[in-house]
Amino acid sequence: MSRLESSSPLSLSNTCWIPSSTGTYTTFEGFYPEQRYNSQSADALTASFDIFTPLQSRTSAKIRPGTFVVFALSTAELAQEYPEDSDDYRKICQYTPGRYLGLVTSVFARWNEDDGSTVEDVIVHFVSKYTPQHSMVANHFMPIFPVNNTVPADSSALHTSILFPWIDHKQWTTLGVRLRVCQTNPSALVFELCNEDFEHFEDKAGKDYGQLESLDAPLDDEAKATLARLFVAPFALPAEIWFDIRNHPDIKEPSCFLEDVDSLESIIAGCMPRDHESSALDKEWKT
Image 1: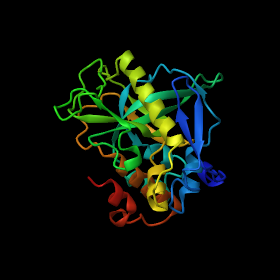
Image 2: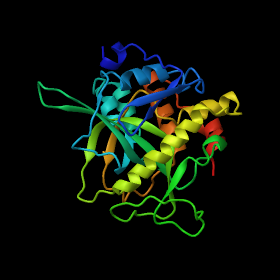
Image 3: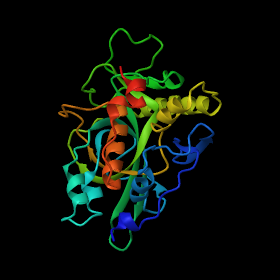
Image 4: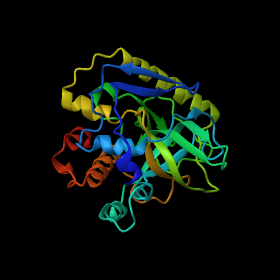
C-alpha cells in the first residue's frame, strides 16, 4: 500500500493561516466553509500533501523571503506515491500543471540531523496582471515597478533589485498558497524585492489581513467558498520552483491554480476531471 493510500485524511478547520513578518502565524475564523477544496477527493489529496510534522520558521539558504519565483504543482512528487507500472502513476505523470508567478513571503524548514536533508515549505503570495476580482479583496494588492500612468498617484510601487521583466503586474497581499519545495531550478539571475519594499509589502499585507478579520462580507456561499480557496492554507502542496522568472511563455492566472488542484484531486481519486468551463471559478475570476 502506498504512503498516500495509508495516510488518514486531513481534517481542515474553519481557519486560515496568515503569515506575519515575525515568522509566526495568526488565524481568523468564521469566513471559511468547512471544505476549502470542494471536490470529493480533497481529503485524500491534502492528506498526501501534508504528511510531515510542523516546520519551524527559519530563513533557508535555498529560498529567501522577498524572492519572486515561478512555481508549479509537482506531479513527479505525487507520482512517487504509486508503483511505476500503475495506472495512477501514469495518469499523474501525464498531467501537465500550469506555472504561476508569486512572491515568497515566508520560509519554514525542518532539518534532518541524521542525513542532513531539509524539508522546506514556503508561503507564496500570487502575482497577477490583474487586481483581485472579488470586491472584498479588490484593493489587496500593490503595483510592481515598472508601471504605466494608470496607477493612482498615491500607490507605492514595489521595486526589485533587478528590473522586473513585465509592466503593470500586481502583487497580491492576502491571496496565496503554501508550497512544499520538492525541486528547485537555480539561476544566477534572481528577482528580489529591495529590503525597504519587502517591509512595505508586509505593512500593507498586515493591514489587509486585519481588515478581513473584522469584515462582514456580503457574499453568497459559493462566492465565499471560491475566495476561501485562494487564501493561504495550513497544509502544503508539493511544488517545483524556478528562480529565473523570465522565459515562461504561459504563466497562468491564480484561478487556474485551483483548476490544477481539482484535476489532480480527480486523478488521485480515480474520478474524471471536473468540467471547469461551467464552474463558479471562471464566472468569478474571468477578466
